[in-house]
Length: 317
Ligand code: MLT
Image (cartoon, rainbow, N blue to C red; front, top):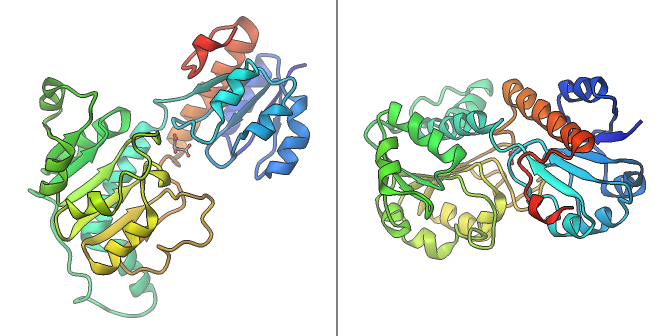
């Protein structure tokens, strides 16, 4: 029986589907790099989220591996080139968690506007700091959405429903599509100059790496509030910290970090930072969807060669 490894807390629906299709699923959550390196040779496929890194080193020992499914959108934790060299198909599940991630970004905007996490901690501590937590309305405020793909476009829709003015920057977007979403397509500089809130919804790539840095921050409004539920690597974290200290950035809500898991971080303890542990996509709804899709994609490929949402499909024989 072909063995499929599941790591990173994939929903049990994945296991059920794999068994029904004649595979032997093996669940190993919280697996470290060394253990993974030792055991990956036994498996024909692996299904993972963002916690496990599939590095070149690990892939080189994966002698029986034919497919990798990322139960989510980003494949930046997988060395896709190393997989391609070994003829291993890499697939993602780009749509299953987009609503959850977009809703989370909107929740972060609300939390930033009204200091909800900080007020919660203070109230639990027996303080009654009514004056401390003066907020701002979001109605009529300008939201800049950087990246208007699967997640960004849902954020635009929800923000319009909340009566925000929405600017979008996305090189792949047309004026017509932006207008259809109720947003205004702008240049990056114009978005920086006009936005009260900015939220990032871009994949990590050579062009987005470090794009939130001292230079881009200097072009933003004083007191801008920023949400990053995309990837830690799009920020130069030291530059963001400096801008939070000077209050050029009034507040940051961050769910993703350059190095994860982030047990220590330069943002931690800052009063104007809301920090969460990469949970934007962590809803039961999304996790069932992505786990089911990953199981189906892996079993389809191993049983019939069908490639779904393959990121290196054209290079795999
Ligand atoms: C994704 O890439 O889909 C998100 O980062 C969510 C996840 O952690 O799986």
